[in-house]
Image (cartoon, rainbow, N blue to C red; front, side, top):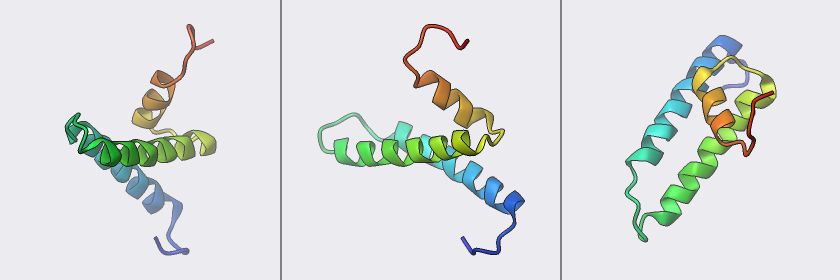
Length: 76
């Protein structure tokens, strides 16, 4: 993305990329051959989610993925 891109366009693009990566991850079959691709897709998705959480961007899907990935009993 170009350095002078506005925040609004950047957020929309990252939101679309997050959704694309999630669909791609879910579409990959659970086989030994696709394991490296699935691992790479999961890593990319985690990086996108962690960026959203770090910057406290209000993206419901990213926050849901982040919270579901936590190993805790209660949100509080």
